Length: 302
Image (cartoon, rainbow, N blue to C red; front, side, top):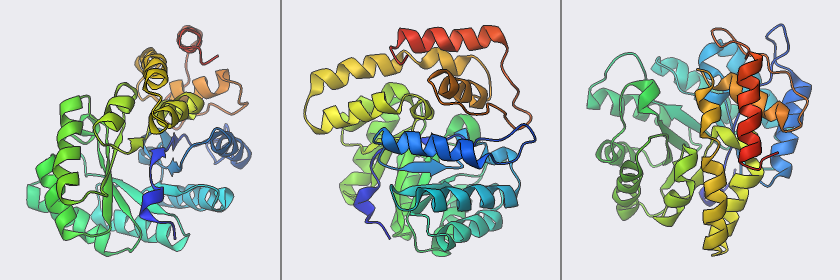
């Protein structure tokens, strides 16, 4: 079991590589994992939003988790996305993650219904109490439809000692700031990660712990350098690299969901993977691919 302090830095939410039949491509997945670890990332998140978890069956999610943890084989911490609208399903997936010796789970709040505050607290508490490994909350209100406010997160954490952090995928520096200040005042070791490229450096500057970025599937070197420059107090270099990272934004406007653009960017950057995506996501046209290429070139990723 890893120490909680090892969950930090740049943790790519790894895309899941499928063959043309929609089955897990273990060779391609392994190549991507090896490439990311070689780039110096601090951990990996499997089955996050970039991993297409919401388009898979329960058994598919278990298969991807089992393969990933086994393949990484302790080289870096591995977190598993186990969120679901169904509390019991999330418990099953979280317990499975613990059984396969994942280092923690990342759980988005239920989407579709607007839940009462108490029901959100109950949902997370039921899951957290079913396992002993670390839990990170995942706040993505643009997808879940409901914000995890700093005040609410504090209430959840007060009831569950193994909830040790949060991924903040919010387009708001002030929200991230309040999350850091509110939680770390009482729980100094609570982890706060940025989920958007634009906020990596600013999150670190106000006491955050790193970033979990879709772009780090194809620009891991850049994100890792920002983190390392900041840790080594080379703030000028960190700021320069942050500007390049922020230039990647047009890639995420090419298509929705963003899975196809991320996989295409990975391939353009030199990794020979299948870019197959699960429906309702679709393959990209040539104009979209050119936009991604041009954006990567402008940001000096290629």
